[in-house]
Amino acid sequence: MPSLRNLLASGLAAATTVSATGINDFSCTSKSNPVVLLHGLGANYLEDLNVLQYWLQNQGYCTYSLTYGAYEIGPLVGGLKPIAESSQEIADYIKEVIQKTGRSKVDVVGHSEGAFQSLYVPKFTGVSQYIDKIAAIAPPTHGTSFAGLYNLAYLLGNASRQAVGDVLKTVGCAACDDLGPGGAAVTRLNDGTPIVQPGNKVTIIASKYDELVTPPGVSSFVKEAGVTNRYVQDTCPLDPVGHIGEAYDTNVWNLVKNVLDDTPNRKFLCLLGSPGK
Image (cartoon, rainbow, N blue to C red):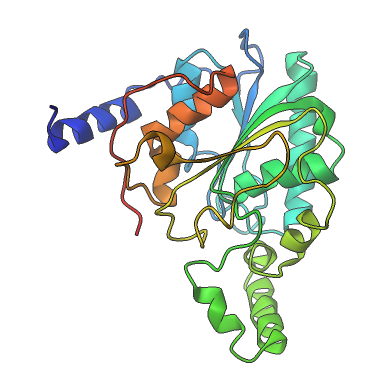
C-alpha cells in the first residue's frame, strides 16, 4: 500500500506536470467543446483555476478564461463587482469564444463564485444556447454563511443584515453581499423557476469539508431533474479537501474531466488534497 508521503508527492507531481502552452489560444483545435473556466471571488484567470486549466489543456482541451468583476483600481482582483454586472462580462466572453473558435457550444467550469456564475449566466444573460456541459465546483447556489460569519449579520435581524450588506458594497465587494444569505443574486437565482436551462447538463461538485461555502453540500446542490450532485468524497472518501483546495485537487480535476468527457463512471486514482475543516 502506498504511503501517505508517496500519495502526497504523486498529487503534487500530477498538479505541476502540465503544459503552459495553448491557454486562450483561439486557433486551438480539439474534438471536445472549448472549455471556459471561471475563477472564484478575489481571484483572476492567472490563479485559482489556472493549474486545472493547464492540466485540461495538457489533456487535449482548448481552454479559455478571463478575469471578470474587477475594478480598474485593482485589475487582478476579480469577482468583486455585483454578480449581475459580472455575469454580463462572462456572457460576452462566451460569445467571443464561440465567434472566434467557430464552435457552436462551450463547456463551462467554475469554482466558488465562478461556479455560481456558471449557473447564473445561462439563466439570465441569454447565452444558454451556447453552453453544453457545466461543472460547478463548490457554488454558493443557495447562499453561504461564509464559515458562519453571516450569522453575526442577523444578530439584530434584517436591519443588521442590510447594514452589513451596505458595508460590503461600500468597501468594494458587492459580490460578497450578493452571495450571502438573502443576497440579491442568490434570491434571483432561486426565484422559483428552474436554475438549469434547457440543453445544459449540470454537475455540482462539493466537498464535505468545505469551510467557506457553508453548510457544505446544502449550500451548493441543485435539486432539479437531470442535475448530478456529487461530493468529492462519494468517489474519494479519504480526501479531506477544503474550499480553496478544491481548485487544486486532482480528484476534483478528474471529476471535472468526467463531466467534460461525459464519462461519469470513469475510475481514477484518488489522492489526498489540501485539508479543509
